[in-house]
Length: 124
Image (cartoon, rainbow, N blue to C red; front, side, top):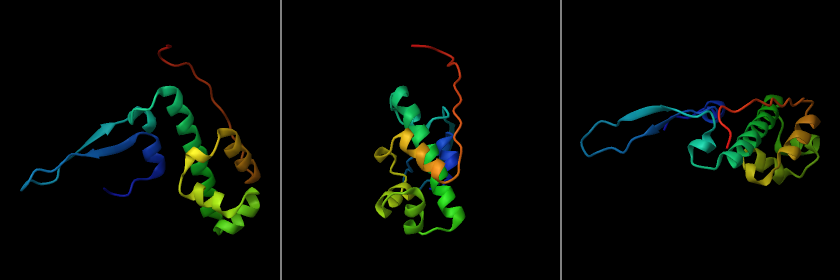
């Protein structure tokens, strides 16, 4: 699989490689995702929305660390965490972080987080 940009992945722009039969050329088909990779992977929507939010916030933290050329130790000092926590961020281990904590970290990086609330097309 070609390297996929995280933002494309999170936005649901990805492809699924189909299994190859013997002596056949590899085949792939593109699917348009729902806009939430976690919904597309089968997670309940309530959980998937939170997972996507955490992934987006964490991705911004990771991108900021890279843009500044910081080592994990340097980033840890700015974020006021230990280096292993930065390693988790760089590895996108979202399960270890709440939206609230990630927003606090972004604030420490000088970022402002905006939240947009929209109506869904269907209500349970």
